[in-house]
Amino acid sequence: AGTFLFCAGMVLIYSHITSPRLQYICHFIFKELMEVDFSITIDPEEFRNYQGVKINYSDADIHSAGGVNAFNIQGNSLLFDEIIIRQEIICFEVNGSKAFFRTHNSDLPFDIFAASFYLLTRYEEYLPHEKDMYGRYAHQNSLAFKEGFLDMPLINIWVKAFAEKLKEKFSIFNAQFTNFRFQPTYDIDIAYSYRHKGLLRNIGGFIKSPSAERIRVLARSVQDPFDSYEWLHRLHQRYHLQPIYFFLVAEKNGQYDKNILPHKDAVWKLVKQHAKKYSIGLHPSWQSGDTPSLLKKEKELLEAMADSGRGASSDLNAIRRSRQHYIRFNLPGEYRKLVEAGITDDHSMGYGSINGFRASVASPFYWYDLEKEEQTELRVHPFCFMDANAYYEQKQSALQTEDELLHYSSVCKEVNGTLTSIWHNNFLGTAKEFSGWKELYEKFIALALQ
Image (cartoon, rainbow, N blue to C red):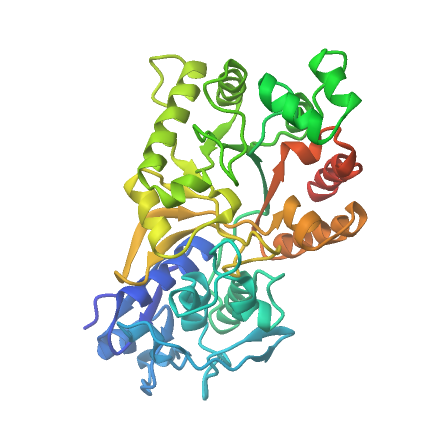
């Protein structure tokens, strides 16, 4: 007799063998997205006797006892491999969305487990590929870009449809999808345009680009154009938002690190104020990508700055969140460095060159280290929109970007996903080059939260 004769709400999955890959993707699809318990068995007799929701993930023809037929999915070899090799991928349409790893004689026309695993783990980023000008994985390499589904949370779409199919076959099946959520995040690369930069940087800046505005700001007759902090605080209060701020605290400036240096009182004060009210995270400097020891040093510095705002007795000063500056990371190296430094939540999963769903998902997930074949404790929080991508890379106006943002809001709501956006303080202040973007953001929030 099998271990499970019946367990209400639990899905039993039969596979000829099990593997860390199969366990990982089933946990994500069932436990994390559907909030349904599951178990994997390699015992055909146990599976045959089970009276609840069951999925035959194999080529075996297992006839059920007691008249309860299984939901059949023909398995792809990907989840049973222990190597990383180029996959043959041919996309086709399923209910208006792209899919791959086609199946035959199955209740789904494709292997949702293997296809989701391929996208979620960023399998293609472990294969030989072209880098972009910043040494990052170039988005043009990706299947999502080539096949035109980068702007869709494809895994969420597949899983929603999968849950409906299971419900059709098993009336007792009941997926519990979470509600849509909007997560605002901000990268503070350059805290102020003119203020607190010191005499030499301001003189140099004035000679390079003479500006009456600079003089007025330094004379304190007008607000610094990058100072959008109080306006954002009022916006968050009005809409009951829980933002996350990522601070760049490089101790020396470089080509890509142009922050106001963290020893300045104004920067300590800014971090302290935000640590009191909101979640904050580290924006590791470009330099830390070349000198790994800087990562821990910057993390400890930000912890000291945050702790000054929370009180010495607080245990909240540990910085656990990070997002790579310029979204500069390659797998698995950078993620391993984050884990080693004590980071538990990474917010870099997106592209720094185009907007969209890099991992084809609008939900957080645990990072799976493909080379080590293990699920890690690093929680990945994907984003699909960054203001700098829309403005600099996609060359969009604020009006065009409004349409893009509303698209992301719509598709995330449809699949009960999380819409995470990245904005920079300089886009939301009074700088003339970003005229209209502040108003766009406020309008978008009002519409997205309806």
